[in-house]
Length: 593
Image 1 (cartoon, rainbow, N blue to C red):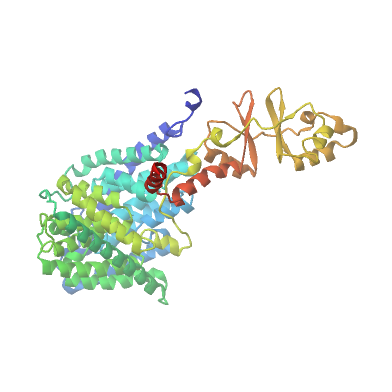
Image 2 (cartoon, rainbow, N blue to C red):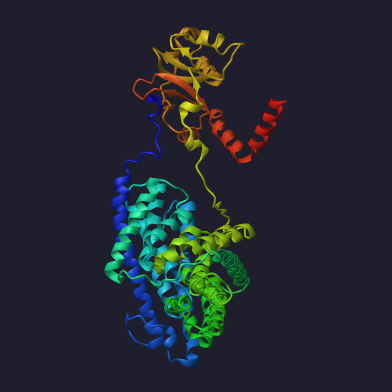
C-alpha cells in the first residue's frame, strides 16, 4: 500500500560507503599491529629468558635460568609500571573495559600514545613471563588505530565508535583467526546496537583481517581437533560442565577484584604494583614453568589430553594465582588465553567423570563455557571455540554448556569481569538491549491528524480572543497560509507577540507578526525516535508534521505526550500477564450453558 512505502527494515545511511572504505584500511592496519605485537612478545621472551635478539617463537618454560627466573617478571613489571606512570595510565589492565569506556563515555576518542604504548607494554609484560594473552592488548591497540583514523576524518561519535570497534575486532581476528567470533564480540560486548551502519564496517574489517592473516600466519586453526559426535546422554553432562564453568568464571572474577582491592590498600604508588606481582609470577614460574607467558602450547596439550590430571591441576592452580595477581596489579595483558587454559583444565578434570561424549570434548566445552560466562558473551565463545578448532561436531555441546554457564553467571553476579572495573569508576553499563519502542513506530502512527490551525490572515487581537481566549481547547496551534505551515504558537508566544506589536499592531495578521525563525517540522515517514531527539535537542514540546519540506503542507501535530504512546504499549507487552486459553475455555463453557 502506498502509505507504507516509506517504512524500511533499516535506516538509510549515505555515509556507509565511506565507512566501508575506512574499515578496509583499519582491517589491514590492525593485522599489521597484531603481527608487530606478537613479534614484540617473541622478541621480549628471547631477550628476557634466553639473552638473544631474536623474533623466533620460543616458550619461556624451556629456560635454563633456575632460581633467577623469579627476577625476570619483577624486572618486566617494573618496566611496565614506569611506562604506565610516565607514559599513559590507560595502558594498564586487559584492554577491553578501557575500550568499552572510551566507546560509551569518551566519544570513542583514543590517543596515539595508547596505540604505541599498549603493544609495547604488553610485549614486555608477556615476554617477561606475564600469564596473559595477546588478544586484550591487540583489541586495545586495534581500537586505538580505528579511533585515530576516525579522528582524522570528519565523523560523528557513533561513526568513530564503529571504526574503533572495527579495529579492535580486526585485531582479535588477526591473532586467533576467528573473524565470525570477532564480529559477535562486537555485537555482544562493544557496539551496543544492531545496525547495518556499524555491523557492516566491523564485519568487513574482520573479513579483511582474516584474509590478511592467512598471508602472515597461514590458514590452519590455532588448536585443530576433531571430537566424535556426542550421544543424547551428553546433554546432562553439558549442563553440569556449563554450571561448573559458570562457577569457575564467577570465582575468577570475584578473586580478581578482591585482589585489585588488596593492591589499592597498599601505601605505595600503583607504579610499583606490577613489580610486586612479578614476585608472585616469578615464584609461580619456578614451580610450574609452563604457567609463564601466553601458553598456547599448553592449551593445545590440554585440549588433546596430553597432560596428566595431577600435572594439569598443579599447573592450573599456579596459573590462576599468577593471572589473578598480575591482572589485579594493573599489569598490561589479555584475559582470553588464561581463561581458555583454565577452562580447558576444568574439562580435563571432568573428562573421566562426564558420560556421553568423547573425553577430549569436555576440555573444549569447558573452555568455551568459561570464556562465555566470564565475558558475558556466550555466542562469541561458542563460535570462537569452533573457529580455533574447526570441530563442527562440538557445536551442540558448546551451545548447551556455554548457555548454562552464562545463565549461572547472569543469575548469581551483578556484573562481569568486563564491566566491574568500569562500574568502580562510577559508570554503570546495562548490558541488555532491544529494539527501542520509539524506533518501531513512525510519526504518522501517533500524531494528531488534521489539528486545529490558525489562519495566518487572522489578526493578533482575534487570535488572542478566539483560540487563546476563555474557551481555549489546545495548548498550541499551527499557523498556516494556504495550507503551508508558517509556525507554531502557544499562549506564551502570543503574549510575547502582543507585547511586541502593541496598540494598532494588534490588528496585524498573525502570520506577519511571527518572528522569522528556523521552523522545526517532522515528516510522516520519520521514526518517533528521530522526532524525540529533535524535540530534546531544540528544547521543544511539539512540532508540526508536514507532507514534505518544500510545500510544508500541514498533516498533523506531534507532541511529547504522543511520543509516550509507544512506550506505554511496550510496557503492556513487558508487564501485562494474560492467559488466553483459560479465558477461551471459560467463554465456551458459558456459551454452552
